[in-house]
Amino acid sequence: MKTIILKIMILIFAGSTTSTIAAINSTEQAGDGILLWFLIGFGVMVLLFQLVPAMAIFCSMVNRFFFNKASEAPLTAQKGKSNK
Image (cartoon, rainbow, N blue to C red; front, side, top):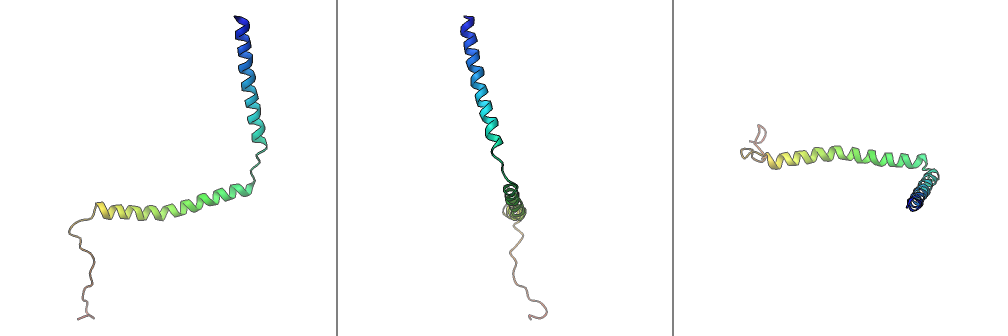
């Protein structure tokens, strides 16, 4: 019984060690360059700079749709002093 458990433990240990060694070796060879990180950073900055005006427009639309008072009429042209 002890020999069977010992064999199973050795197989489990050997299986986990090979996957760990494979993971370590694969990450060492990746070597992403600095240009790739600048590209990713530039993409994130573009998204953030577009998010600010988009959120402002979205909040104003939600405000207009849900909190619009009935007494507020749409803007119309009014006669001034020069348009008599």
